[in-house]
Length: 136
Image 1 (cartoon, one colour):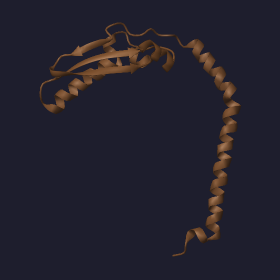
Image 2 (tube, rainbow, N blue to C red):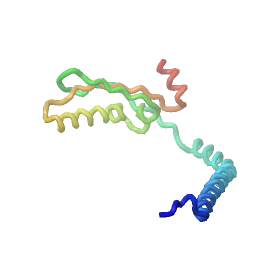
Image 3 (spheres, one colour):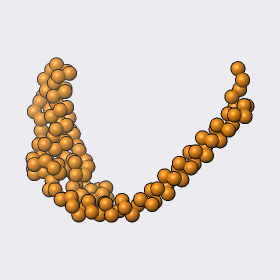
Image 4 (cartoon, rainbow, N blue to C red):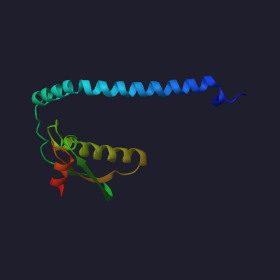
C-alpha cells in the first residue's frame, strides 16, 4: 500500500484544506465586524422593550421533610436562581431541584424520603461582580 503523504495529490488536498479554512475564518471575522453595528442597535432596542421582572417572593429557603441527616442544597446564580418569572419562592430552581431530588431518592432507594435543606442566593441583574459583592 503506498504512503499517502508521499503522493503529490495528497499534499495538494492538504494545502487546499488549509487555505479553505483560513479563507472561511477571515470571511467569518469580516462578516462579524460588518454586522456588529446592527447587533448593537438590536440589543439596545431589546433592552428598552423587555420589562424588568421582580424576583420571586419569599421563602428563599426551605426544608423537605424526611429522615436522617439532612442534605444541604445551595443554589447560587443570577435571575434564574432568584426566581425571576415565578410568583412564589417554592417554584424557584432550588426548591424544585430539592423536591425532585427527594422524590428520586425515595423512588430509587425504595426507602423513606430524604431530608433536604435548601437555600438560594441570587441577584436579578448585573454580572458576577455585582453578585459576588452582595454575597461577600
